[in-house]
Length: 293
Figure 1 (tube, rainbow, N blue to C red):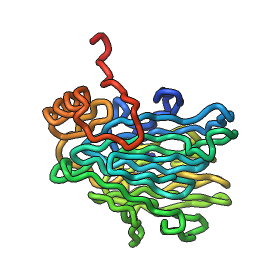
Figure 2 (figure 1 turned 135 degrees about the horizontal axis):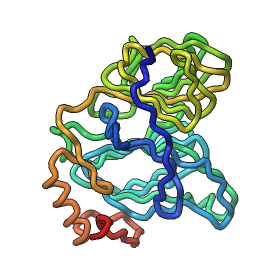
Figure 3 (figure 1 turned 60 degrees about the vertical axis):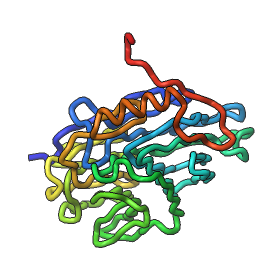
Figure 4 (figure 1 turned 45 degrees about the vertical axis):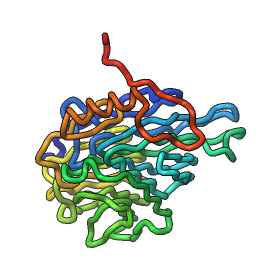
């Protein structure tokens, strides 16, 4: 019997001037462990006059994880952070009680052709930390744990697994793992995983119980301890998951919280422009209105 419980196809979504492939949330699966939102950005080939420009917008109750395969993004936030992220590094921004940030093509790339490709991820915070002080962490690519095992290359981008721990400062038991194969290889890592688990196939394909799955599919496991599959040659996949929270987390726009009243207050605060500002940024994104509202 296959260990794959749900297959989620990547769906197109517009985030302003940039199209992405949305993986989570999904109507049949709102979260995988603490992971509540995943967008696949690109791959996009941008002309010398095209740039990524996501103006200042707020978050509460979550951490964002940005991981790029190609290109670069300038992150600015209301803490005063200015950080360019490039492939293989991690930007980890924890919103807590509230933060505002922008994401734009860096100045040195704005007038040249470039590519942009990566993952944007939201991780909900545990109830006791939802209203913590906001923070930002950047981990360079060279500091991400990477090793060879059973014919594949593994990176532990965030969290803990395989007896190792990433430097990314997570707040609940979770993992975000990259696995690459150069040749056809059987992988059996169920004993290393815990909680809920899902797999995103970026390149290549995998086979599980006689079924083959390819790119732009998110596979949600029934049981992490049974996680065994065969990777085809030149395959890249991402495993993520961890312990689910006992309480439901609600999402409205960029706000994630277990208390709907806190989300309502955040909506009012953003509309009244009571959130902190991003230095040298003047754009304001209005609060989205519900359909028909």
